[in-house]
Amino acid sequence: MRVCPSDATREVNFDGLVGPTHNYSGLAHGNIASASHRGLVSNPREAALQGLAKMKALHDAGFAQGVLPPQPRPAIEMLDRLGFTGTPSEKLTAAWAADPAIVRAISSAAAMWTANAATITPSFDASDRRVHFTAANLQSSFHRAIEAPTTAAALAAIFADESRFAHHPALPATPAFSDEGAANHTRLCATYDGPGVHLFVYGRDGLDRGHAEPAASKRFTARQTLEASQAVARQHGLTGEQCVFARQSAAAIDAGVFHNDVIAVGNGPVLLYHETAFADEDTVLAELREKMGAFGAALIPVRVNRDAVSLADAVATYLFNSQLLTRPDGSMILIVPAECERNPEVAAELDRIVADPANPIAEYRAYDVKQSMDNGGGPACLRLRVVLTAAERAAMNPGVLFDDALHAKLVDWVKRHYRDRLAIADLADPSLLNETRTALDELTGLLRLGSIYAFQQR
Ligand code: SUG
View 1 (tube, rainbow, N blue to C red):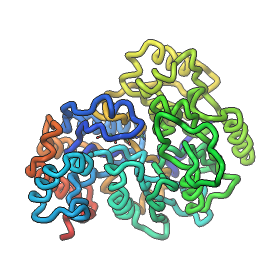
View 2 (cartoon, rainbow, N blue to C red):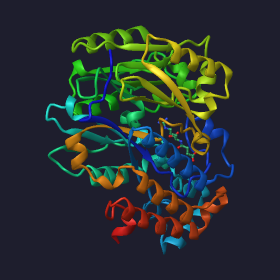
View 3 (cartoon, protein in one colour):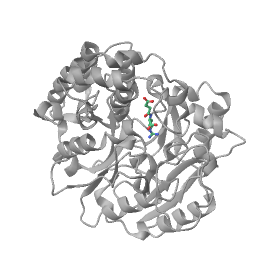
């Protein structure tokens, strides 16, 4: 089956612009790259420029590209809630003296990984024909749980037209409803402007039903719960026929697959996945086939066997944290991290996939996003996919849609405002707070977003 995006309906990839406090604090549970780079000196300027270079390359290749702004960090308003008083600088200094772990958490630039920002249902699948958004509560870690309100505000500012866009509240921020957004959600379809099946992947049960959970992960606690995925589907009005809920394999979670997008990626009818991705692969495929078949679409599974690429290599190279994109002729391109080309087994598997006529993946291209990769974020983590009709694109805030002019402005903005080295001790520096606020205040003007940040409203 050919997937050909019509001019009318396109997938827009909204990449997170890396924020000025990008650092290696090792905060992320179950994320091996984050843990192994803990304490190293980061380069926020290079991180932001690497992200912008990827956006520019995909824009130049004809893909629809958008950008989402960073969040204000350090998140000083959190310090108010934690009992610190005084001026912003005084609060920061007091918090560092009391507990540097608090300052590390409120300084994280993790909002760059916009695959975790929200879950989106395109209007075609919604009974009210609106695009539905739920900002993820990211409750499993403090440094990410603080993202949800600003994410929701940014999405509401960008997709403001209530007749076309519906925004739902983030789920209750408690372990039972732990939600990590689109990183655990894939829409499979024949064409973007036709019906889709929503594959929600979760790692554990949220609520206690009085019986032991089968095959729970042991080394790392899974982040997404079944109850969270089900609640998002309910909010968006999706029916049972439109959804497949699949459990991740515990082995994958324990090997460092903290989100499903570290082990699988889908686009159109294609699902590229590692054989260890799901607890029950056969049932997942059968259900997808049946539900897609109901509207005449045929699933194209592309399975990577562990004999070809080990689970450890899949995690180390982030082979599956790739962007699978449809080109105008219906063929697909895989945007992989540069690390994939340096691993002979992974490179050989990519060559095999591209040569295989049974799937539409015709090419792969590697991009260097190493600054992000070292915190566990590859090309797919850096982007939030939103399928939009032409009318929806016309109704959204155009300031965040990427073009050459915006690229030039953002590169210039990064070069003027970002440091090229950030050690953990630098997070205590009050001038970093002022630099960040000055930069973000200018950015909301560049992106024509209005005053979306709390510090701008005072
Ligand atoms: O939540 N890393 C992020 C990486 C998110 C990747 N996203 C997807 N797979 N979609 C996380 O684990 C590290 C931050 C630090 O250590 O400072 C971090 O939060």
